[in-house]
Amino acid sequence: MEQNSLKKGIWDSAAKAGLVFGIIASAYMFITQFMAAGSWPAILQMAVNALLWMLKFVGCIWLMMFYMKKLVKDYPQADNSSTFRFGCITAALSALIYAAVSFANYAFISPEFLSGQMDAVMQQMAPMLDSNTMAATEKMIDKMPQITFFSNLIYCFIYGTLLSAILSRMIPSKDPFADYKPDEQ
Image (cartoon, rainbow, N blue to C red; front, top):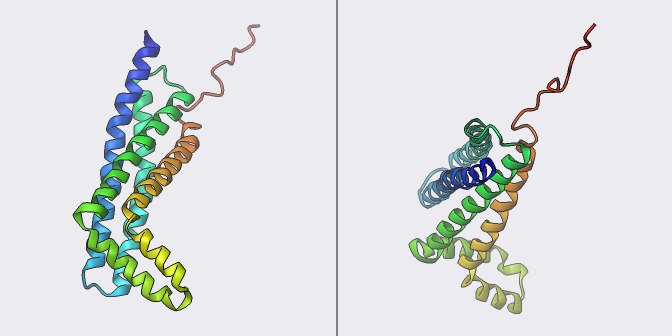
């Protein structure tokens, strides 16, 4: 019975954590997109983007650790494999949320942002590309929302799974003296 409770608890906690991670990543995407559309000086924009990326990176690591420790606190029978499973489920759900939001953003909300970015890249690359490559790239631009969906889904899942593998080795912490029994003399 405890095992079923733990499995249900893992899915429930992972869904909540995945939603938080998905919202954080989506908010970061919209903030950086808003900043790119503004008329900020390039050096300031780079500095703010770097700071935001670092906050997102460190914050996601800290949040994953927080949610894993919360799972262990709520379910004392949770072991390292349970926290790893929790992290993988969280990674999958947050990746799905973020990939869906990025697809909706590039396909429906602000497709002009993506086409503007691609046009800027194409103008820079045009002297180096032949006509066949240019035509193939133009065809690919129409499929960029789908490409970003799957690339974000795969990247975020892999990142979350690797993070889970690293953190789950330490959560829950193991007592090295748990099996120690002093000699009785």
